[in-house]
Image (cartoon, rainbow, N blue to C red; front, side, top):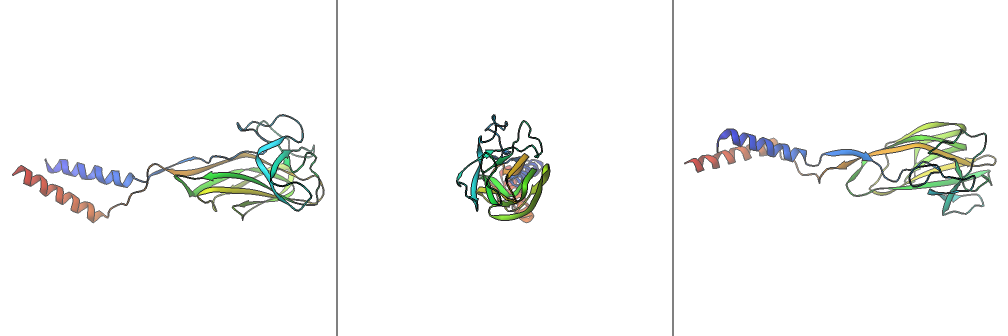
Length: 218
């Protein structure tokens, strides 16, 4: 075996090691706009249609919790579209004068790297809202329902199940909120990460292989 062939072999081996653990971005599963079905299409019907993705997690008002949020629209709100509707804790947005938390759950399990996750979208709230990720305030707040505003979340994600809470406070009924154009990306490891040897170790490997070849030639 010629030395040039050894050089090529060692180079290829080093490249293979360095490529191990490479990652590529994929869409975060389980993210849905408010008021849509499993295919992301706006739910059909008037007020009171159950949202299959958002739940009424908690409330200081006299409303059931642990149940699905439902569609509710007021003519004063920003217009709904084909992939997003307003939702509330009741079909008429009442009672108000309090706070209700709506929860969306999604997973970053397996080979997804939570430290690389980013979620963006648009949202509105009647009257005001704050977004919490895994129980921690993201700093994203909103006051207003005439138009939707952008939000970005790029930290606080964990391996496995994650919770995205929209804490909506109302100063007089109705109470509602809406999420549109929500999307997210996260890095997925192509293969399990491997330790990368120090440059000196690769050099020793090359010398050892070269010596072996010379002994075979003799």
